[in-house]
Amino acid sequence: MGAHGEKIIDYSLFDARRAGFKKALFIIKEELLPDFQEAVFQKVSQYMEVEWVFQRLEDVPQGVEIPEGRQKPWGTGQATLAAARVLEDTPYAVINADDFYGREAFEKIYQFLKNAQDGAKLDFAMVGYYVKNTVTENGYVSRGVCQVEGGMLQSVTERTHIEKRPEGIAYTEDGGSTWNALAPDTVVSMNLWGFTPGFTPALEENFRRFFQEDVPQNPLKAEYFLPFVVNDLLAQDKAQVTVLSSADKWYGVTYKEDKETVVNAVREMTEAGVYPAPLWQ
Image 1 (cartoon, rainbow, N blue to C red):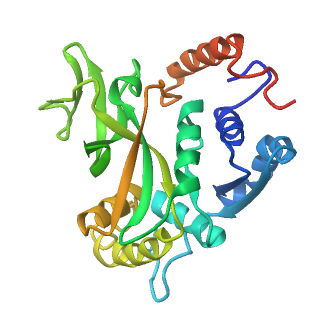
Image 2: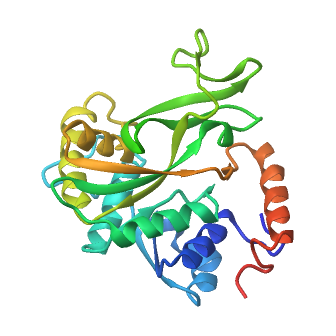
């Protein structure tokens, strides 16, 4: 993406470090460790503490049998749980490695986590983006559509097919037979969350329930999605989630045609002085 071979994750780490984060914990597949060490660790570990944990198919609750033929791990909820077990008593932010969030997002989530404190409810945050800033010209995307009241998240619903259409942004749930309009300023989640250590027991409990309720219905493809856990806590009134709005444009390479847009955006930000070149120097 960058002129010196930087990847999207490099810019996220740079922004996180600049915001105040001191440590990065990667959740990776074990077979990707050599590539990760070469592409990320050797560069970034000079500037911030870097660790990694593995997301494994076989890391399931005691007594659970892995369905025959299942090949992929269990989703973003399992990945977050693997990290949370290592972080123990530390508040943390969660991101996708292949999404470009922007400097403001990391500054806001860091400031929130500095003061986050669980009380009667768990105290979480989410950086919300306007859906108009998160769609691509080259196809459809999956986004968590948020219901927000008074700056607090009420629910997040995964919409797996959102696209820019001639009449505006809309989503379909039936393969395109019918479309539901989304206002351009609808808040969506890009999986940039801020959690306290109190989240770990909920992740563990919901993971067990996932195997009891969801896996039997779809043993080879069922996924333990992180937003589902948050939704469950909201429904039970066990958590509050502050929505930190970002007017920044999201960038990502959902389709190969998106790459040129991201490269151009990074170049413009670099020329404007938002990022140095090379990034790590």
